[in-house]
Image 1 (cartoon, helix red, strand yellow):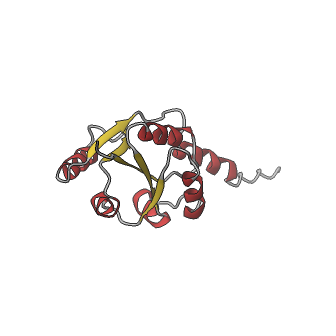
Image 2: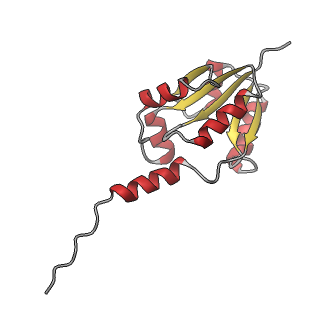
Length: 149
């Protein structure tokens, strides 16, 4: 029987139930799960902003999840380069990638090395982006009251 290594990449900023669900579902489909955490610098390049929670803290959180066997810090944008270091058999992504140009490119690229892409339902109710927007709204300085004449 072949040992199946899974890889679940993400920023995992503002860890929430959607992250937990991805890791839980991923672990159910492999023998060994590696969570790939995008470095602060790579997250900034990809999303235009750094994570709220710094990498060492995100690593500690994700490594503490019982579904995760190992954590790997991604420092390059090319997932195939990451594969050369980690050597996983299956890559897990949110289904917001399915059917998109970037999803098709990912599938084509990984087909060349025999890696399966498995999509999981995206958690619509909670996202780090929504949480970040809420935090920004709470911490934004309120407009100064207009002075009475």
